[in-house]
Structure formats: C-alpha cells, structure tokens
Amino acid sequence: DQFQTTLKNQGPIGNKLKFILQELQREINTIGAKSVTFTISNFVVQIKEDLERIREISQNIE
Image (cartoon, rainbow, N blue to C red):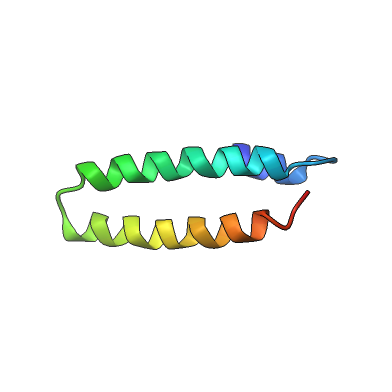
C-alpha cells in the first residue's frame, strides 16, 4: 500500500522507494527464516527475485 502510494506521488521518490524495498526485504527474510514448509520457501525465493528486479528499476527513478 505504501509502495503504491509513493509511486503515485509527484516529485523525487527514488530514496523513499529504496527505503520501502529495504523494509520489504527484511520482512521477507524474516518469513524465510521462520518458514517450515517447502511451499513457503519457494514463495520467499520468488518474492526476493521480484524485489531485486523492482530495486533495479527503482534505481533509475529520481
């Protein structure tokens, strides 16, 4: 929700997106560390890949 709101804002948003992505990465790392099922572990890996792609794209946004 915060990520989408930030994308809709006018002005520089690159640093804010970077911060939000860092927080999302921390949360997914916590979920991954606590997961006990293969299915959740697979989701964690997929989400990490998606977050990395988003991070790369967000570096080009001011």
